[in-house]
Image (tube, rainbow, N blue to C red; front, top):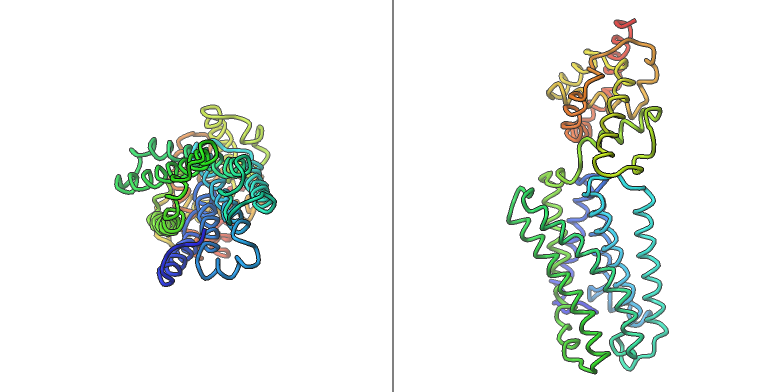
Length: 379
C-alpha cells in the first residue's frame, strides 16, 4: 500500500532512512550480526522506497497495485531473512557460510511466489484481501508466517539481552519495536483469516492507517537508532572476541584446523577455538619481533597488547609469517591460553585502529624492517 503521508514527510523519512543506512555501511562492523542488521535495514528501506508516494505513483500504472504490493512484501521478507541471520550470528556459534545465502535465496523464492499469486489470483478489488478465501489466506500465510517466526526469534533475544544493554532505554525501545511488529503481522493474518472464514472485513478495514503510515516511521527510526548504536560501538557486544580472532587465525594458518568451524556447537566449539588459536599463534610467533610491536606503539600510541594484535592482523593480511617459518620464537608467549584471552579482548580494537590509522596497516616498510630485524636476531 502507498504511504499516506504528506509529500515532504514521505520523502524526508525515506532520505533520513537511507542516510542512516549509508552511515552504517561506513562505520558498522563488516561481518557477523552488524552486517546482517545493515542488510536487513537495506531490504526494509527498499520496500519503503517503493511505498513512497512519488515512486509508487510512477510504478503502479505499469505493475498494478497488487503486484507492486507483492514486491514490497517480498522485500520485507528479505529484511526478515536478514533479521534471522542476525539472530543466528548473536548465538555465538559459527554457522555454515551457506546458511545466510540460503536464507536470502528462500526469501527470493517467496517473493516470486507472492508476485505470481498476486498476478493470477481472481479479485473483486485491487488488493489481495479481495481475492477468494483460499487465495488470500495462501498469500498472507506465505508473507506473515515466516515474518512472525523471524520476529519472534529476535523479540525473545531482545528480552534475554536486556541485562547486557548499555542503555536500558534503548533495550526497552528496541524490544517494544519488535513487539509491535509481531502484533502488527499477527493482526494482518488474523484479519485475513477472519475475513475469509467469517466474512467480516471490519478488522481488515481498520488496518489502512497502519499500512500507510507506521511502516515509514518504523523503518526511519530503526535506521537512525541502529546508526547511532554503530557509531557508539554498542554492537561490539554481539561478537564473541575469541571467535572473531579464531576465524582470522584459521585463515592465516589453515594447517591448524582440525575440522570445519561449524562442525561443533556451544562449549565444544569454544574449546576448539582456543586450541586452534594457540596452535596458530605458535605458527605466527617467529615472525613477530619486539621491534615490530614497538613500531606500532610509536606510530599509534597504542597499548602493547593492542599493538601486538595489530602486528598479527598485518601478518594475516600479507602472509608475512610465511617468510619466517624457520626463525626462533618472537614476542608471543605462544603456549598459554592467557595469551589467547588477552589478544582476543583487544582484537576488534586493533581492527578499528588499523582502519583509522593507515600507518598501522603494516607500517609497510617500517614494520617489514622490524620483521627482518626480528628474523636476524633469532637466527
